[in-house]
Image (tube, rainbow, N blue to C red; front, side):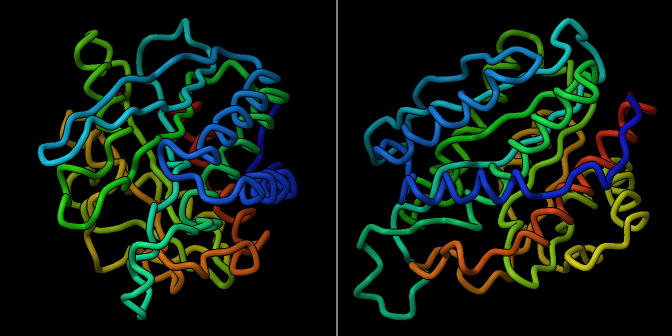
Length: 292
């Protein structure tokens, strides 16, 4: 069955986002984090592919070991080469430490509708859509845990632990070369959002980023923008460090990032739809001409 970008309608993504937000804060180790993992498993279990374990702990000097559980789903797992990986993090920031009122910096309560929720919701709809229409594409979808579980003084060694653990395990088992490319999305659901590639994607993975930007340019959607001027670490960095072409789509100018105001009403179904259509176009392009 032929796929087209507009097959991604965004309605399911919005439903998934509503469910994720209903679990409350989802920082690593919280009850909401466990509920989110159960929910994601329940969606993937209806899809045509393989749900795999990706768990363990990461040690960070100066704190207790952090238990991590990524949710990892594979379409066409029998295909070992030139796989595409799409990823996002599902956990939320434990504290709202970008609040102007510093007295709030160690309270709990970050809902993470856009930061943690939006990317997860988009990838869940994408998984269902591909399962229905084209389940034979060699694609991994990974929901990373523990993206930013520690205070800012632990940057960068205490951040992006889920993706680093995932990459470390694939390197250890000799399977990291199975991936031809990786695309991570983060903070991609805000109202009037402007989502784009950041600079390390362009500088470290220019060919792959060019292909992603080509999908953006082809669709010409309101929620997507040209590459941003900033360069940031995120879950794509571990893949870049392992030699895998990797890019990040993000709206780092989202005004409610790491605050108590990152709630469902700050997100938009239109932005989810637009970003989902870009991802689907990337998948279509990759299935026709995989990175080698």
